[in-house]
Image 1 (spheres, rainbow, N blue to C red):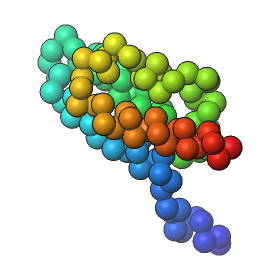
Image 2: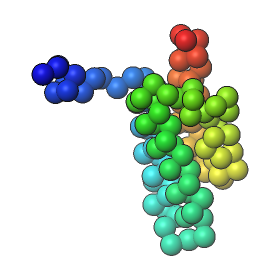
Image 3: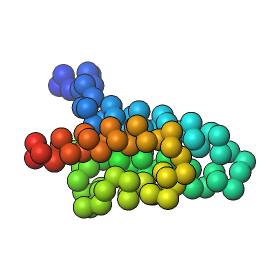
Length: 102
C-alpha cells in the first residue's frame, strides 16, 4: 500500500484560504436561510466549494477559466456581503502567488 492512501497530504496555502472563504460564505448562507437572499448565498457557497475541490485536484486554473475569483463567485453577491472581503482578498493573493509559480 502507498503512503498517500493512508496519510492525507498537507493542505496548500490556496486550499487553506479557500477553506476560510467557505467558512465565511457558510455563515452568510446561514444568516440568509428562509429569506429571498438564500438562493444567491447558496449559489456563492456552491461555487466556492467548486473552487476548493478544483484547488485540491490542481485544476484551479481550469475552473476559473481566465476569470477573476470575484467574477467566478459573483461580484454582486460579494459586494452585498462585506464580511467576505478579507477572505476574498486572501484567496486572490494566493491565486496570484500560484500563477507566479506556474
